Image (spheres, rainbow, N blue to C red):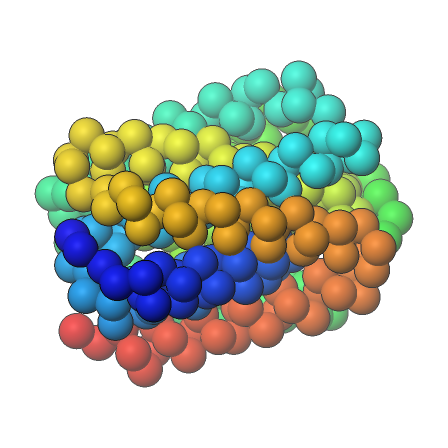
Length: 252
């Protein structure tokens, strides 16, 4: 599709902001998807192009956290694998089954996540006791959340973060870093499916990818500097914004 230079400038700016927000709390799609739709993208094109530009934000964040010594990627081999496979299956299934029925129930789940982040004593800047071994975490949690991310998606980052905090005992900054790593895997799986379907608008997506890369870099730095004081309120805010969007604006 042909876009004017003004539209490219808007998309770049929006992706810059979305990359910053998404690297802290997730929810960048809340900013990007409406902008793409208003720019004339078909729904499938908007979803696919959002995945393309979003994966660069995840790459930028993971690169930053790895350089800071936060990420131990080899320890996440199983969760990465199950997240990727789950997301690929979810992205394939959504092409044949409507996800509308989830809109009735997912807001309650997101609300429960928000309440947990608001009131749980395990949320903070220090690691807590681990409750689940990494193998079981991969089999029971990341496979399911990965599938959900590929199939439907809203609040999948919050669900990953919740698992890292409540079951592996990670502090909130560390959980945010590892969440970006797993979302990189799920986004890669979903994007592969979208590419095979021919729905990606490449010029717009790559333009936005630059903005995502820059925004995510500085958002990740903000997480390291501010910790739970920044991440916790943003996570809760994004959860409630998702609930509002799904309840009031996802009727059709």
